[in-house]
Image (cartoon, rainbow, N blue to C red; front, side, top):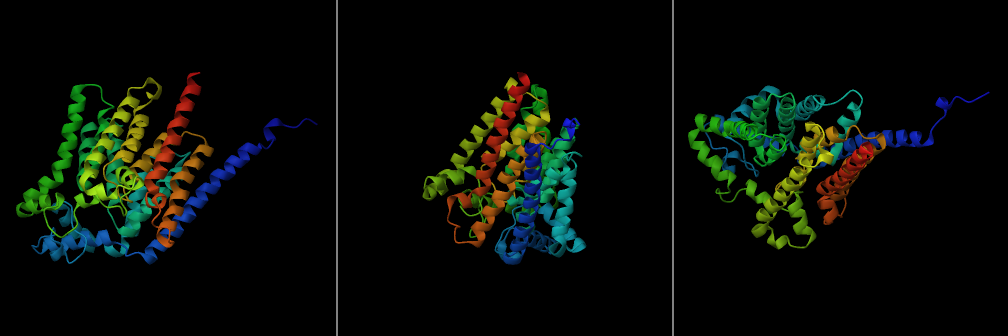
Length: 398
């Protein structure tokens, strides 16, 4: 009796399916294990404590930009209008107690705007466990999930041709941390006409200045203090410029290179200029890709590739800064084979979480590899993404 060829088991497919499912499950379990350890061992919700305390201080007529008035070690680095928002939100939602669940809901909303039926599980696992960045958000209480929601809505509107609203929301997203304004080339390079490029710049700048302008209107005396805090003119307290010279929890490529070559002593003098040069190279690489006929696919493909490249070369990164790049990694790589997606999970979820655990819970926290594991694994995964895409495109063309 002839054997039905369609009923045969294919060992290679079985192995691929098993490997894919194993990486999904391992990523989730490792993430939950590391998150549980972090919530038990770290001083959690420190960033959120700053937000809520800034709301209280400003509502009582104080100056949230002075750590002496905040009563905290960390400083407030945001437009004063945002503090009023947290003055109402913190008690209304009991944020300092419930923020993990609220952040999880915000994250899921931002992610599900993009998940496809076929790859929704892969997308959720990659974006939630990748580089342990959501874990850092949960531990620190940082507002990265809110930024992620604004970013997700912005690019959704952008690819639905709602350009003005998209770029205004993008500008608001960027105004929260300032550095994300450097994602602007990802929008610009998709436009051909000078008029369209000018529109993108103007609308993104309108969004970028909206919160500071609202802050100036509502609290003119505090606006000067906001500027002083952002450029480091308030002595004896932390400011954003310090993070161009910190080795600990500053996984930017420029700082990693200074550390790799033993040049930590030169960080304070030279890192800002080195970081800008690296970013300029990232912009140039992305520009060349947009002009390459080989990679001239749909706009969402090029945009996502641009966000990935620009993130790697951003002058300033924090452990909770990678949610936008993880979403874009999903968007540009979701059509690849399950085996390749499983390798992405190994590089972006499993190995980074293991590195996180080794860094914080063993004596290996002086290792260069463990210190900068987030940017290292992102670069490795990006190389795999680039060459696998290049190979698939060449195969399709042949």
